[in-house]
Length: 280
Image (cartoon, rainbow, N blue to C red; front, side):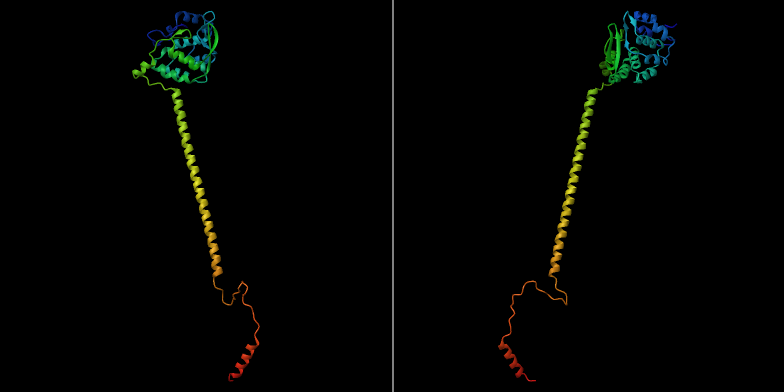
């Protein structure tokens, strides 16, 4: 009973889901200690804890021993969780081995359109994964692992089911064109550069306007000061030219050119004669 598929499971690619794993590897998984001790009576919820504890991915190693990663994959094929649960596995970004396990299961069981739509966003994940095989341990990146799922025929010593190529799906209208991250980054950089140029031109125009306004205010202040100085000078001149007030005497600042002369004796005699001739 422990090695049978859950009742009511749907056939995948026309066969039992567990048969997607080769018979030799499947029998070795059934005989492994990890399968007997840790994979018994696991559910879609309790398998999360086991996937979080994983420390590497891979197929078989050593003396054809299956990895814990393969054991949990076979358990997922056996219990066949719902699509919404697997999508939630993919969204758990903090648990990278759980995401890798869900990506491999989706590649083996989902339709081609769903595979491309769900796995292509994982190409942006650049975290490291430990990989164990017959030659030992190695490091791979998450995007490399996902790309191998989409392009290679064998991953983790398991033959991948065939899926239609992306180009065929695009020609049939089932899948939209793939967006290149490089072109998006270039377009984003060009948009940023255009925004920077616009902001620079705006700042320049603002600075020019401020300079012009300052120069205008300075010229206006200078013209006002000149007008005030001219008006003050003219008012001073008008005051200097204004007639003197009554009772005041005009005093000439220039030295008098006339020289005072003493009265002559002839003029005295004429005055005396005039006094005599005038009748009283």
